Every structure is written in structure tokens, then in C-alpha cells.
Image 1 (cartoon, rainbow, N blue to C red):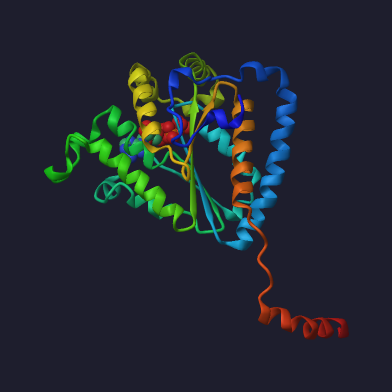
Image 2: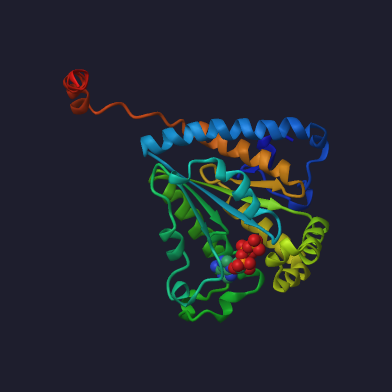
Length: 286
Ligand code: ATP
């Protein structure tokens, strides 16, 4: 499969059950793809420097996944290869009282990177249509009845599309990633968390209980992605059973997005340029 086959930008519908969760035929090329990942990220870091210097556009990657799909390790192994000075990583946990007292985009807006920087959202505004929908949490919200309508989530899809279009029109790009892990691989990773002392800290009984809702999550992920896949804010549905393969695909997406943005170092300001001969003379006299 080519990178475009993992991409959903509103032109084709996603059928989640038809998407691969593993590396498949690419397993034989593992060492080549691991090397290509390194190369991609070196090139991406060069482009990131131009993005930072130009400050014309900002970029956000929103990572969504089931538990143990590998969001954290993707950040550790891939995004860590970018310049941390121009990288803003934010994890979105269960909203606290203050978050819930505001509209759901409030905490997201506060985490936005500046133009010139790259933001990584470890979970994102999409939790507000994913976990909230699966558990029907909106029913318990303290909220005026006129906002608790039958089409609560259809409204939210529209709001998310409007917000992402607004960002696009204001110099920001949003790229959304769904790490698609299989039920078998998730089970194995949970077992590792139970058996290996160095992984005990990641153990959460609540995460395991979510497995019972696997089919409902499937339905809601598919519906959400189909409702919010647009050309300027696409989704990528990445196989997540083989971490090295997910990392390779992620490096391709980062590189491709930065190449599409095509940042360039800004030219020297005319006033500054006029001062250069004088300053050079001064330096040579030292
Ligand atoms: P890991 O994947 O490494 O275990 P995590 O992202 O699951 O880390 P946790 O603190 O274990 O981190 O989980 C965060 C929890 O917060 C998730 O269960 C997620 O669904 C929940 N959450 C995030 N945003 C919202 C939201 N807007 N409404 C309700 N729950 C949310």
C-alpha cells in the first residue's frame, strides 16, 4: 500500500475493517524501512528549521488511538528527532472541573503551537466525539437543554470541521492520525504490562475494560473519521501492530506534510542588509 492508501481526505469512505493493522508484505523490507525512517526524519528536521525561521505556518499532528496502540512511543522515537525548541507536545487527559466549565475547545486552543512550530496532540479534540460518544458522557454534562440535542455529535463533527477550516485559513495545518492496533496485539501488550516490571507503571484496569466496547469504538472511529476527513485536515489510518512500520509511515507523513508546506528561510530585512558592509568593516578592524 502506498502512503495515499492510508490517507482519508474526504474523497473515499473509510471502512475500518478493511484497513491493515500490521506491516504485511513490508515485513521483508524491515531494515530498509528503518533506515529510510532515519533519513526521512533528518530531512524533516531540516525543513522544520525553515518552518521555524519563516514563521508563516504552524502544523499540528493529532494522535488518536486505542490504549496501548503506541502513541507515547511514537512521540518518543519519531517526534523526538525534531528540534524540541519548535515542538509543543500536549497530552489530553480526562477533562478536569475547569475544563468542563468551558466549551470543549477551550483547553485545545490553549495548547495550540505558534506559527513556525509543530504541535503534537497526544489525544485531542477528537476525544470529545470518541470516548464521550462511546460512553454517552454528554448525558451527564451540566449544560442547558438546548445544547443537549439528539444530533449532539453531528453538531460536533460540524464544529470540528469548521474549526479546522478556520485554522487552515489562518495559517495552520492539522493532520490527524489514527493508530489502528488489532485486538490480538493489544491483548499481548496488556499481558506484557502485567508481566514485565518495567511496564507495570503503564498498567490500567480501566484500559482493559474498554476492550469490551471494541465494536462500538470501531463504529465511532469510522463514523468520526468519515465525518471529519477533509483535504486541508486529512486523517491517516496507520497500522499499529508493528511499531517500526508505524514509525516509518509516520516519518513519511511528517516529511510529506513539511514538503507540501515548502517553508523557505526568510530573506534578510532590507534595513538589516544595508548595515552589513559597515558591520563587516567593524569586525575586520577587531
Ligand atoms: P497511555 O495511552 O500511555 O496509557 P493515555 O493517553 O491513555 O496514556 P491516561 O491518563 O491513561 O493517558 O488516559 C487518558 C484518558 O483520558 C483516556 O481514557 C481518554 O479517553 C480520557 N480523555 C481524554 N480526553 C477526554 C475527554 N474530552 N472526555 C473524556 N475523557 C477524555
